[in-house]
Each structure stands twice: as structure tokens, then as C-alpha cells.
Image 1 (cartoon, rainbow, N blue to C red):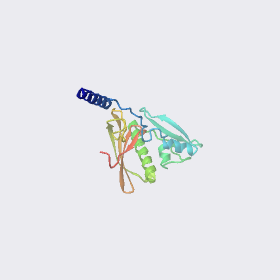
Image 2 (image 1 turned 90 degrees about the vertical axis):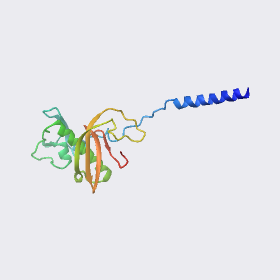
Image 3 (image 1 turned 135 degrees about the horizontal axis):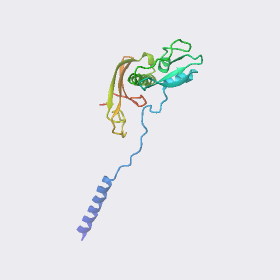
Image 4 (image 1 turned 45 degrees about the vertical axis):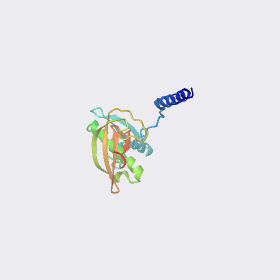
Length: 188
């Protein structure tokens, strides 16, 4: 009788342990890293300096930003941000030649700005070593944070390699540059 009771208790404990091991884990949502909600720095710069930002469409359907100054002159917002033009200059905002070029420029500029913020190196002093189109395996651009769940969807974008202060830095972006992640030494 004692053996049957002991065997029943052991089986009950094993059943409870087995069931608890099969229970689903509660997933806690982790906010996305990076600067997905970061405002376009060139647009912010234009507005901060008294200009008016305007988004225009190029003939091929791509979009680009223009900073319009109080004197009526205008400049591509990224060129103004880099100091390549100023209010009163005779040049007008160029129409980008292709949507691809526009998205490539945005990816590079966003990576430069992020690196500049992390290293305190002026964005104009950061060299572009390479820019490659890439299809990332997930919404985390192939660089998930620890304990982050990434949507398994092919995400087109760019791999941007920059150089600053004698070091190379590699960034993954989506096509718009709104999702950007930096490779680290621990990334495989």
C-alpha cells in the first residue's frame, strides 16, 4: 500500500513538472532599437535655421527634401545640412536622378549622423568606405538584440561601411534609413 501511494505521488510530481515545462512562455514586447522614430536630421536642421522643408517628387517617383529659405532661394536639405549651400546662394535644389540614388544617400547620411552622435566625430569628417544593397533576413536587419524577437521577413536595405578616427564601422539600414543598426564585434 505504501509503495502504491509513493508511486502515485512520484507520478503526480512528474506529471506536474512535465506540464509546467510545456507551458508557453509569456513574451514581453521589447521596443525596437535604433532610431526608427527619429526625425530626419536634415529637415530638423532646415527648420531650426529658419527654413521651410518641402518634400518633392522626382520624375521617376522618388521623393527628396528641399529647404526653402526666407529669401526664396532653396537647396537640397541634405546638401544644406552638409554645408554645401546656404541661403541666398544661386543654386536651386537639384532633382535626384533616381529613387535608388536618393535612398542610398539617405542610408549613408543616417549612418554618418548616428556614428557622429556616438563618437563625437563631425559627420563631414566620416568617410564612406562602401555602400552595398542588401536583403536582410528579418526586420532586425540581421542584427537582433539579445532577447529580441524579429519578424522573419526579407527587408531590403543597405550595408554601409564608414571610417572615423582610424576605425571602421558597419551599419545595416532599411531602404529609407528609418531602421538602422550597427554591427558590433560580437555580431556573427
